Image (cartoon, rainbow, N blue to C red):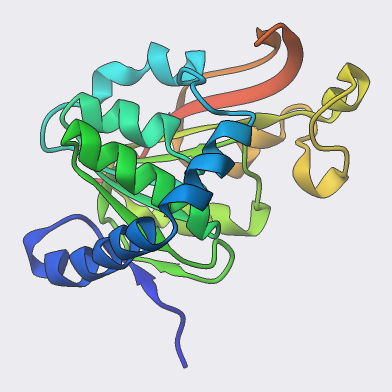
Length: 219
């Protein structure tokens, strides 16, 4: 059986996406109490969007189609939707998506939640104006992420560097940590508009981060 496809938030796929969103909403009603307890425990509860997201939020406008891969509870998906973007949020954690769907509905924001395998789900090509990936690393996925960005669209990514091991928290394995200079290579042949490797304070803790803002130069 072929892997399910992550579609754009368009009219032609709205029924398919809405059905998945409806399933998220149904689970919210069935597990509201459990989800509330989970939300209270999550370390990213109430966190603002990444500074990297905020710096580049000007690309997010009404009608812009956004994919947030590995969205978690949706701090970036919600922030994008608040700017008028039509967001598809994908994650493997059904409970996180339930929390995200409930919060989006409470704020009357356009966020469609898809509970899908992050490694194998296909992504519709050239379906999104912006693809976002924060605090998630799957090197094999980058060709798919690039193909998902329409010509002239953008890829916004940020995650931890190997020097995060020295900070005393966060991921520790090479599988989940970027080598210096690696993120820029992963987005090639996109045009890198801005990139950085920094140690940034997040909630009072140092985070060693690589970030990139890149454009699909195709016509």
